[in-house]
View 1 (tube, helix red, strand yellow):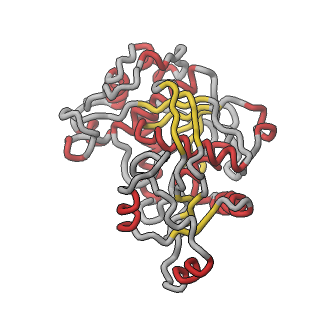
View 2 (tube, rainbow, N blue to C red):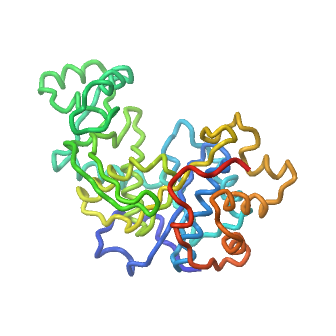
Length: 321
């Protein structure tokens, strides 16, 4: 296997990316076993990377200190191994990269692009239901962005810790997705550090993908709308963004709803207990998106044939196996 990116690699510009080597990645959160939808996304990310000769990295996204558990890290890694996925180097952990995220926030703050937000969940829900102008429905409208110095001090005196938001000013974004085509929108004032101290998902992902030299991002379609926020961060922080994006269909239950525990055997362990082999589970997952036997065989040989996103389509086609 090729050498992996250094776990402590920080943000880099395009000139700083090591040999500009193509890299894909998969980034699970250790909050429980991977369900079948997670595993299918991992398979697609692996197939796309390996078929193009790219490195394939793993990153443990354990930012959520309240839900992440160490015991699930090894469980998830073993699940990936069982269905045939390998990776380059040691997995990187976000919990070991806090200094890099703090540095990125300070860089944004120095440019006047960060403000404190004291809104409660209820206030945010109420604000999100109001007209938003150019922003999408449900976006945070910048309630705390225009607080006067006296108003800011008054809120600080309440003792409620603030979250940190960016001043995106409804900046436009545009990118091409391998499944969804041209995607456009506006960037809202999203959170980069929560009021409990945890760093925001978009900040950490942007810093890490740039720092690891990721060139292709494959993830679930539920994260499609986050890409604009990350593109904004790449630009403001002077980082190089991935070249290609593919937001893949979510796994569905028999009722057409997003896969959940209520649908029955939704984890690899449960499928194995039902009598299927790990290879049969992987075959069924890929088959649920119409991929042919060559994709399945690639898991055994480790040498996938050329992979074409056009064979999948953007609609939610996958049914529970």
